[in-house]
Length: 189
Ligand SMILES: [Zn+2]
Image 1 (cartoon, rainbow, N blue to C red):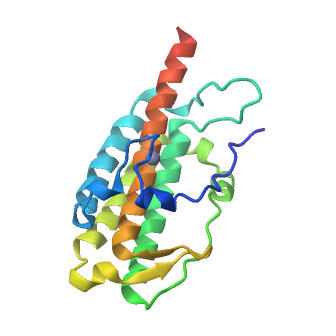
Image 2: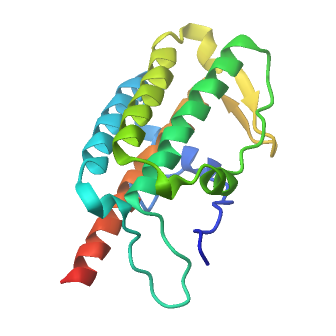
């Protein structure tokens, strides 16, 4: 298989319980703190994507297991997640209970050719998109945190829960990338 499998899991449970894979715990984070965490996360991605050739390598997987994404591919994905986050947040702030368009993550990765993109450009664009998302969150006031929106699969969000939900993805994938780097190093020892 050339491409990692699509991530079709529904991750909305991370709003109600800690994520065992990356230790993200939504119950410990105030929505008002998400913007700061987004900016810190973008800085961490910049460091990760600046690590040279290793960012282009996919971690080894046991025979028969699907491939895992390289740091570069995860970075490109997170860049797009932040762009989508800003778009959806803006929609929730402007429209009454909007429904989000569907986004097939795997199709995006294939169509946009994540593997062939430049790490420095991904790093820069990720920071720009994260900054835009964080800037929008900075402007959310009072009742606006309770404005609503719905994903095409029926999952309903408030601005507050959406902010937390969106933050988990880039945090989770940063942990994926660190694990991937370890696996690559172990395989080369
Ligand atoms: Zn997680």
